Image (cartoon, rainbow, N blue to C red; front, side, top):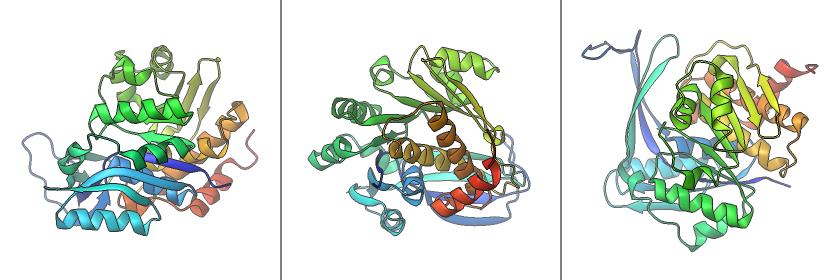
Length: 312
């Protein structure tokens, strides 16, 4: 049976420039190539989930500009259900992205229409209630995120929160989260513990949420929960081209893996889910772009098999 995932989040048009190195404050760097790519953490994760095999619905907002039409069309083309995507007066969200030759990047986001996602209508609520997993981020108004999480909890839908961009979070939201996905910087901000040791960060987060997935970039990911389970999963070794959407590929695939197991997440299942998510992130990083680089299920499975086959 196909897993059902609903994403409530942002959609932006990414304006991407490649350059030999990223500029320092006050510095101008001569770029090499420019392209526009549909993006936004919410939309990226929705596309990632759809390509990873889920039936994925998206709740968000675009502006009534040319970018909005382009963003809507890109989601439709990826197989995402956009009945929850509003069109509001004004500009769509935009992200300015620079990528250097080492595949590192910086991103500045102008939210635009994303800031107008201030309520959930009857159809949104029905979709969340029927989903296996609700996937959330922090690029739309926080009250909407809290409302979606509260509805999911009431209906028995698993809540996965990717706490990005990093921000301190109210207990009202954290109490509704089933799985928190963060990188090391985001973990420190959410936990209020500024440490370089992943175990310290994870322990602090487990005081706030029942399960934590800590993404570690090229090193892979770590998992911990309140039952005492601790896992460290290495990432596939690849030649990275662009890491812009690798985290979104990881998170979208993780949500699908979690949904497909219907809550049966013992140590073996969590290990498989995290390996699959790491394979998705690595497959994405092998291609340039944001949503255009998000991998199909076959590519994820191929890299998963090549990396982890025979691994205990």
